[in-house]
Image (cartoon, rainbow, N blue to C red; front, side):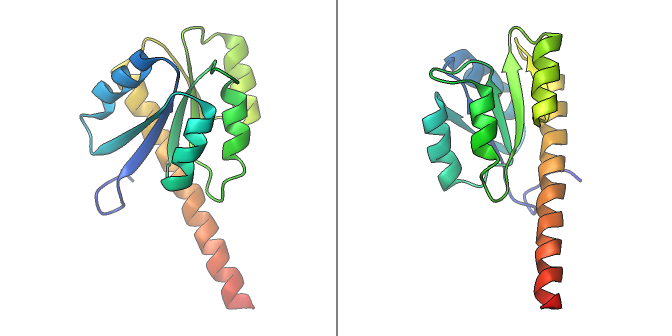
Length: 146
């Protein structure tokens, strides 16, 4: 399944203090009917997450203050947490292992490669979509059972 207009607009949040990250991602996702929202810090990201139904978050490894793990922790407190993709110029084996073991969806190296960003965002969206649908079904079954 692909995100389409009938399924709603795919909303992506880019969290990075680096404006180049936002510009690079916009040039990639701008070719699709996807909306890229931008935050330069974790507090700004939380504000956006409180106002929009975000399905995928791309987060720079190092934020000021904080880091991607703080964002992951914040996302896990949301009713329908978006899939998190960590981005870094230093996407080494240690970051991959730590990020994936803690529950992120993917790690992307920078500079961004168009094909990799699209692949990762689509699969992260599909995961989020499946989780959201499963939660809705479980809720329906529980209401019917009571």
